[in-house]
Length: 226
Image (cartoon, rainbow, N blue to C red; front, side, top):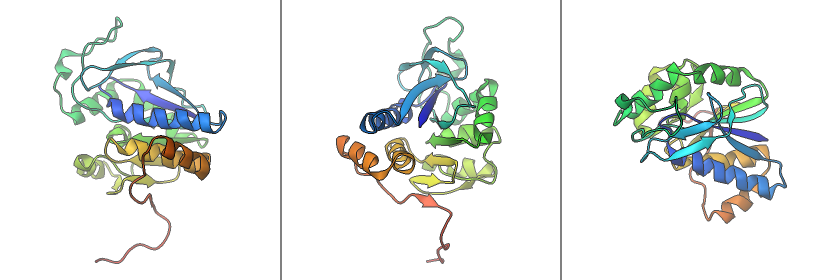
């Protein structure tokens, strides 16, 4: 499984780094069955995150036609100054609320690329925190089941998504995680689902992290009201 983790201006660093480390460790534990890279809609560049201006480097352009996993993080904090010419942050983004930062992705090539990834039957799209809102505000998740940070559930629901208050939601080729630290649980679940429970357990033990919550899926009987 090849995983492409998407960077955009204002991304939440933990939404990226936690899944990256888990998936990279999964690749080591599985003798290379998992590979992972950081990508952007614009191609190789320094991308400035929204927490203290931390920048990570995308090494390739997002390829929506490549089979595997596309993971979209949420946004956080404020955007600092990008290092490369042509990618300086808009001064108006400083201190902008998270929904504004997520909404700015609509003015990039990212929605079109994500639309192709969503339509690719050989690709699973995963999101962490506000990453599901990136797809939702682009109109790509209507009628789907997904989760996001608890502060964004009403907004997610307003876009036509069936918002689920769960740590991880598995809706087939769409798997979403809730608040920022859920990126660990999301990535471990994806390792279990795509590579196997022994690999996922080995990485879980390496990271000294026990997954939290029940993964929500639509199969099985619906619960009666308490």
